[in-house]
Image 1 (cartoon, rainbow, N blue to C red):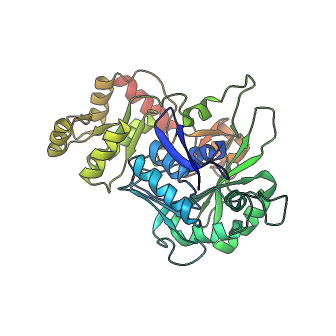
Image 2: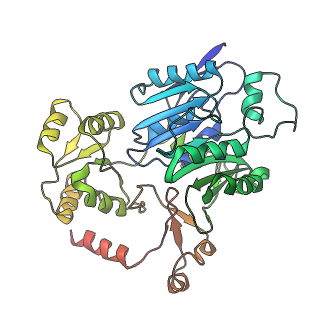
Length: 391
């Protein structure tokens, strides 16, 4: 296989991929932006190709492990090389296997599975003469039902499967999900410009019984000016994420929720070991917040940014963080459970999903793209803002 090296995200990711055949494009970026990874989660990519989707998720999030399953051995070897050269060989690996068959991946153990499945049904349209590209674009080896079935087998109860499909196949995708024991939870359409019709659907399925899915406002790729939208520009590396960003250990879980409510990126997991915390803080450039003195000493020795809030009282911890990092700018709130920025939804999306009085007395609603929880500017936010002013 002849290969090329693609430099992506302004040199932060280097991707070896086939010189001819299927090569990654903006679709992988869209799916990565939709597939929010909570800190410390394990991620599986079904049909990983060169591994680009896992590389993007690893760059923007803090997973604990990455596994790519790829039917074509040459591509699986290429993905493994990409993991190694981008510094992810300790947490990421690719295997050459058929994800439709048992043994290709751990079953019932993962929190998140992702897939960029073939767009077209076998027998429709003209397949590419390049075998690799044909398999990526047409359902020659696996169809939507196969992807849904494999995702359901991989996930633990409540786990999430995120994938995208062409708009014309959206109904087919939803109709195939119940047989796999999956239910749609979050939907987001993708359109090329503000005036164009959606051409792709991003869908999150959950392995649990759910009410009707939440539909987020569309993801617009380019503005009328022709420039990428601010959201897409972030995921393309054309603008940096807002600072400061934090990584909170198990000792400051309530502080992490306060920071998220203030609109700040505060990753948190109560299952992380010190080695993982150190490695992720060093790689991502986040400030590690902890009260653990030995861990603080290691951070100082290894030149990892760290901060001791100096108190065990969450309110006082927040005051110390605000003072130390000059957090004066206003930010939109993030999900207190997932750390994902909440996205606005049409008001009608909240009908029947929030208390009737809340629906009648509020005009604006938002939703977390990860857990799908609907939020609004309620009394808890007013109390928190009053506390910030008091601080």
